[in-house]
Image (cartoon, rainbow, N blue to C red; front, side):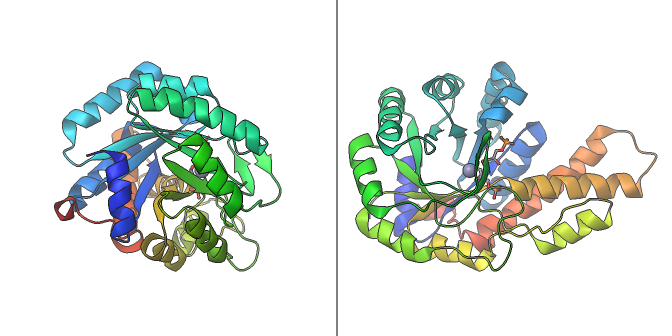
Length: 307
Ligand code: G3H
Ligand code: 13P
Ligand code: ZN
């Protein structure tokens, strides 16, 4: 089963796949445990900085280990690759899919770089996601102070000229835990216009953590200091998964919050414990719980039996 087949199935059957970021063995296996328990496909994503943090050889080995351990279809994806080199490195490392994020460049340069990555990746049977528009906030090292929503006309030109497999769009979400100062506003009207312009292109939503209030509260009660944390309401995520062509929803911050909460809680309640397997084990359980909830109740991902 290829990722492109799953995307097509997702558009037709009104659901999305979660793309959950991992940074170590614990977070990878916690996400895969969740998908395995629910018998659904899932995407596990590695940012450029997480790639460097884990290192090429170790990352390659844990991906191979995961392929031998889990029977559900899972896809390893490079998140926000900034140039051709890192995309090539990820492909060599065994990734199924890469994102080339040249969204900070002018349109023609974004097209040019995306095309180079598409040519290289497709020859190796690897899929490519690109981005058009800008998300407010920090995208790795790039910081944008304003949203620049994706232009539907540009999206059509971009997809036709690059032959990219999926497109990440900007409709009001942003990375991190401080997404909105007031009411959460997501431009589903622009999403509809994009779908009308490129009806068969699988679309991707970045910056889609819901930043659960209970988690923020519990982290702060345990000594944390998350201020003005606000995420994307779950109803909106379900709406774009089931009524629109969004097939991939990116979640990183919520995983970080689940990890932080579990470790703070465990160490507060067990102050003489020094075995990392104990508190990392609690983090794993909390990530698995969060990922299962999203797959099942928010993104409505279909079981593999339904393919
Ligand atoms: O898209 C942004 C991700 O949350 C990656 O963040 O570079 O800190 O791993 P990171
Ligand atoms: P969040 O910060 O909302 O989790 O977004 C993650 C993301 O888009 C990774 O590419
Ligand atoms: Zn992102």
